[in-house]
Image (cartoon, rainbow, N blue to C red; front, side, top):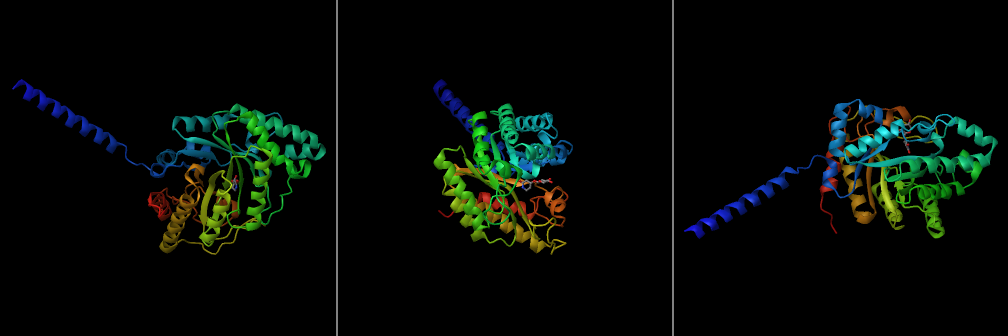
Length: 364
Ligand code: XIL
């Protein structure tokens, strides 16, 4: 009798244990995009807006496990005037990332568009100074956040908007094309574990530009320059053919480097990279357009998952994730709706399309 009781008792304990384990599994419900995938899902965001908007923060934490600063980590923000390093905002971003378990992506070290006027003025007079400044800047910055910033866009947009020519920036004009390799070397010396990216736009659609970029990647690999990844900004339009994007992803993935879709957004109107302002054909958005955008987002993530081998998937990062905050409207002076969330911070078909692309079973 006692033995029977014992057996029943143990059975009872086992059932309870199994049930509570199951329940625990159930408790870990998916909250947002980051929970549907193995690679990080990131967003670039203006850190001051994020800090002052509780609703935005809630949605950001739900969906993303990687964060990039839209402007706060660029040279213009870090050293706006000579000898005046400003780390405060970076420390705030880092603290947010660490507190909420998000990867901090460093954007960027060298970019013509964020080179402060005082740097340009000094460099015009003295190329040697520019060389030593670049070394000091990268060494100090990357060194300060060693082990904290997971990856860097080391050089951003070194090629012209169209075609394969080097962009004639102060860096290129004064130091020659070797400034790119040097920047990677300095960054690697300062943090050997950081993942180092070359980042650019239009490389998903302009074969000349793509090839020029791939050429330096191959040169770097042959010379032992420590490059570890390619960043496709992926500021695309609805009418950029998926096949064109797939071709570029395939070529880039063949390098074996990490592939980051680093600044994703999809617009209906046109960017115009040759003059300020874009071309606005659509000034309102219809339900049909929203649906088509959802499909485009779905295809983009499917292509990334199908073409880029798992071990090279560094992640997909959106450049602002709401239409309310998108940089597109201000920068190109056009109306548009490029993001996952709308003006009222509600998820759009773009969000659900992207999520479907993350969840869908792959054919192969
Ligand atoms: C943009 C910011 O979002 C804007 O606020 C700023 O006015 C200009 O820069 N490619 C890049 C990003 O690499 O740094 C740019 O960010 C968008 C294009």
